[in-house]
Image (tube, rainbow, N blue to C red):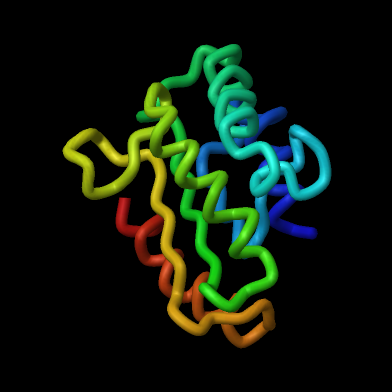
Length: 130
């Protein structure tokens, strides 16, 4: 449940932590598996919580990742799509704005330790390179 905890930390401690790496899990602000069942509401909740801290998109980074065959994919993907559509504080990579959010899904990736380690291995240089 590390990813769920990561999303709650984003929602409650953005003024203390600036880098978030939710691996294979959605935000449950709108209830269990809310990223899949209520993606637009989840995106809106996260944006409101972030804006309440006074932080802008330049003050945090989210590196969300999962696999296309992961049990979390059907919930994380809709949430991330809703965050992209929401815009506002969420600036996704590759869309011309200063990046605050990246989302990647590895083809055939599943919910296991091997893939989690691979995801983290590929994300850490992005963080340390800043």
